[in-house]
Image (cartoon, rainbow, N blue to C red; front, side, top):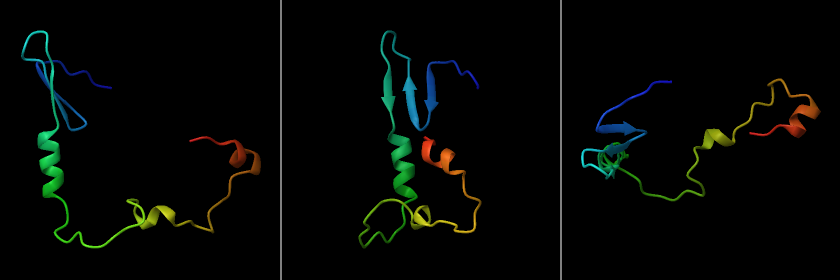
Length: 75
């Protein structure tokens, strides 16, 4: 874990500006601009889910959890 101090901080794309006493200014503008710039040119089409297809694929050959663990596991 790291600690950062100062009047202008960035955390997970969110800029926190403490330069004005008693106020904080939040901005995600640069993060959004970068996100838009990195989008593919062709976004035509539809999708049933925003999740990538590989998230729904399973490996039938992988070692299975013991039934008790599988039944009571939480994420």
